[in-house]
Length: 359
Image 1 (cartoon, rainbow, N blue to C red):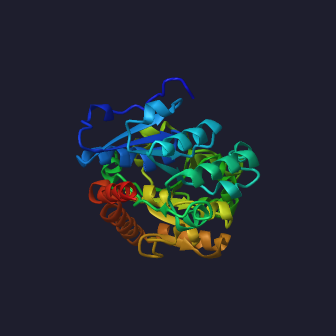
Image 2: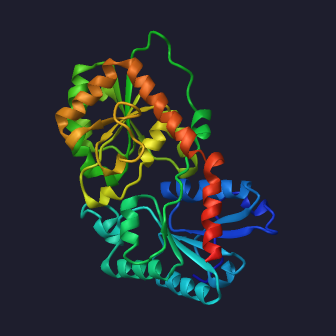
Image 3: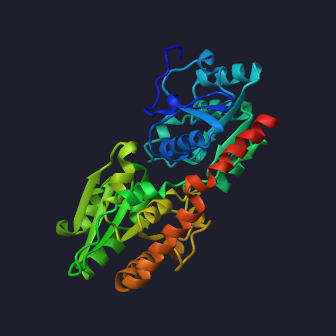
């Protein structure tokens, strides 16, 4: 890690650093978590006039980080990262570890499983223990982090609803009665597919005006269940283009099934946030993941016990009640816009880092 670090493309270097808290984010990935939980707060922290924040990815060393007051390590687990955290602490710099998944309970068939060996997990635990603070996205992850570090915070979750809004398509023609049911997923959701595949097949056969849209991944079982003329599948896009791609899917209903598993219990509400930002009504599992702020029949339809019959009923209800579906989508968008837009809540991040520096 002695080579010059690479910066994730941004214009943060144009900001003045004088008299500001200086924060470096060392990103372990450039996927969704890096966008939502690093890039977005980084962008808006700079706009407060109180913080200079910079994202970094790739190789780095202690010398490159000494100008910063706070250094945030996202998903880092290398021996070099552990050594750098220790050295930064020795010279009085504040360090933070940020994570978004329950790495200790990854299912065996999850593509991420081979990367998190017992050795890697022990090293990650050591980094978490060394840092001055840990940040994570859910109460469940907080309970895990508290096993290794007494200072754990859940930063306010931020959603740029106006970015999604800027790419929304014009209203469809009045004679267009199609219903677009979508799922944003990855290969990490293979177990979740089997909760809903039969229900999706039943809905497709019953409602010929439905179109099923899969973005990011397409399981072959879905292709065997849903007629080809009612199916659309799109590859994932680079994270910087994600909000445009998601908004232009033009979904009426978004599905968010999660199988009951400790790994899923650590997941955030991010999928509901994204559907809501796109003015899409969500049908989701009535599970821990969607327990905060997600209200059944108000801003989402929550499926009890993940039973196939209940998934079918939920989809039928939203298909057959377009006014209630649109009202649910509006309530969801309004909740996310009112309580999670960065312009309104970035001050919570500034205060979190100020308190850390005062310790």
